[in-house]
Length: 346
Ligand SMILES: Cc1ncc(COP(=O)(O)O)c(C=O)c1O
Image (cartoon, rainbow, N blue to C red; front, top):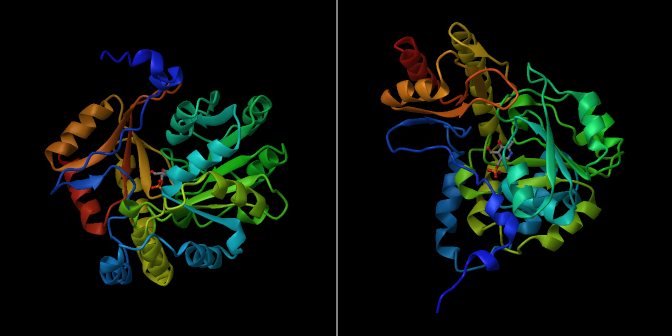
């Protein structure tokens, strides 16, 4: 029997412009997805090995994981929602709160993609030309939105939003997400605003500083009421037991994470100086650096580095901005040295 797909599909799905992950080739240095190339704590690896023969049991450590995260954040378990990466939490927020959605450009693509998938209207405003945050324009545009997305430090620019600006946005009384995926590389958080602002939802992840990207675990910090709503719409077992075990072990070895974050931050400053000899670069508070390589195109820069077995993220041009952009993650010290050598030969 003929099946006419078109008439059965939700129409807005045809407009979805899906996420494209960073490339990965065995044996290449990958600086394309803002991972932590020092890898997870040995304690995490040991805990995963030990758990391997118990995967017949459904995940059951949600309470423990939330308690451990809460302790790390100096909050209570009721403030924490654990999810399958912060990607899932973005989706849960958009399942709970209706649109229209507001975000800024350029930023992490999932706010737009998830909104499109869920059929929510969304709009954006451009950051300033130096990628700083345009508070007044954002506040104005927010009048017509119901859910607000902010990212600080922002992917892909590495720039941050001042706490006082976030506070002004929270005063609008609309649900406002502050994506702090790169919190550990910056050190400042908007969590102190939660007590006074029940509309604040902070997203964090174990994928970056804790180096658990492959296991998919992130968390939201919110009021207990919002956390309750997020749990209502979440699949019960979306955080698998390996992710739970790894997060618990990682939180028992925060010192390991902090040591590597410090190395990454030192190398970030060194790379910034090196890259600024050649390109226009932006100061970053995350574990990556945005480079404007024009007149060389980002595709050209990508190709030249790819020949030397280094993969970076070519972003091309941003609508409304001049330039040709490439995002380069800060790798391990050895990888960063190789990157510099490669750049010297371009
Ligand atoms: C700003 C931002 N938020 C969220 C994510 C996704 O994180 P997760 O791996 O926890 O889904 C990323 C990943 O690159 C990101 O840059």
